[in-house]
Image 1 (cartoon, rainbow, N blue to C red):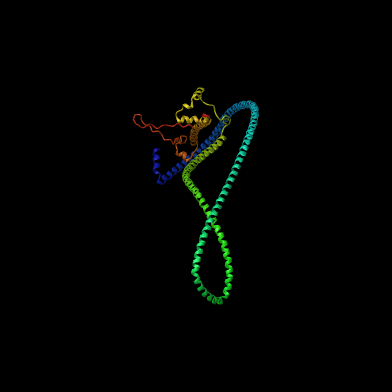
Image 2: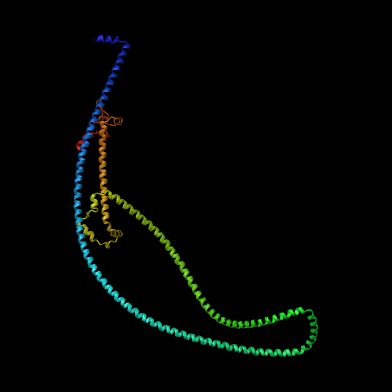
Amino acid sequence: MPKKGKKAKATLSDEEQLLLFQQKMLAEEEMAKKKERLLSQFLKDKLAKEEHNSALNLNKINTQWRTVLREIKTRELHKDIEILSQTFERVVDCKNSVIKSLAKDLSEAEEQYAHALRSHLHNVDQLLALQRCRLNLLEESYNRELEALTKEFEIERKTIIDQHEKEIHYLQDVFMAMEQNYIDSEYESKLEFQSMWDDLKNKNLEEKHFLRLQLENVVEDLWRRFQDALKNYTDATEDRKVAFETLKVKDEKSSKEIEAQMKKIQRLQDSIIILKGKIMVHSRESEEQNQYIRDDKELVHVQLRKLKAQRTQAREISQENLVKLTLESNTTIKALRKIVDKGEKILKLAEICRKFETEEEKVLPFYSSTLTPEEQEEIEEINPEEFTEELAKVIADYIGLENFWKRYNKVKLEQLSLEHRRAQLLEINRKLREMLKQYLDGISVSDEVLSQLNPLFVVNHRSNLPQPLSIPTTQPGNKKPPTTYNIIEAAHVISHIL
């Protein structure tokens, strides 16, 4: 038999060997395709099974989580109802006590009001009686003063009238004396004038007589010549003579008027002289008065300069004060605006925060003090005057903000506790997300999952995890052996947690 096989093999030609090789290749390809189809079918079946299991597990988790949430919510609601009932009872008790105290205060206030009204009416009656007595006394004093003033007025009036009459008589006497002096002086001046006029008249007569004697001869010669010339002249100027006569009549009339005017002028000159004397007297008096007025004027000017200097100084000071006041007012206005803006912001934040308050916070906004009675007594025994530091004094000034700081500290503590709780929940959420991601990576097939390490992905009894190398124990080395990881499914973990 072996000899025959050798002969058969030897008898195969190259073409037959090629055909056999091609058949073997085709058979291997068919086997590989079958394996691939089987593998894909297996993976599809496994994927469908895992999806079905994951949906089932997710429904189980959701149902169990809902029951847990319902139980927690019911417990919270029961606690809230208990707290609200307690707070409601407490508030009702507080309201009842307040109503009782207010009713008691109201009755006491009504009694006090009635007592005060009676005392007020009694006081008003006393005040009215005192006012009537005072008015009677004032009326009597007014009448007495009025009688005294009328008597004084009558006495003063009589004295003034007597003095006025005396002054009138005195002025009349002075006027009569002045008029008598004027008449005497006028008579003397007339006598002097008459004597001077007589002297001048006598002198003129003597001179006239002497000149008459001298001029008689000349006049006779001239008379003859004149007569001759007159004849010639009368013959020549007959018309002019008529005109001369008329002019002469007019000249006489004008001379009479001139004399009358001269008399008037003389009288006026006399009156002017008298008035000049009076003017001189008055000018001296007015000069003295003007001098006094000039001195007063100088004093007034000096005082005016001082007042102007004081006014300018006061104006500068007031201007500086006004500038300071405007600057300070602007700074205060800005500061007050900032304070108002801050207050409005605080009020807006308070309105926003009031929406988020719980029923317990609305009923009891301020919690009771956490201090022990001994610590509270020690704080009350401390005297604010003993504080030496400025900070302690400022704290003593802001004791009225104790309720505000209580509420602020309460909110701050709640904020810190919520932040801490949020951090814990975020950590729990992160862990749950990691576990859920591990579970989903274990049940899903994708390029991203295949490129990563996955202990659940096994093909041909092989995993994509790196195999640890066997290191002989006899060889000493500094490198540590690679660590192994235990992978637990998320569904298994959730079932044990819930």
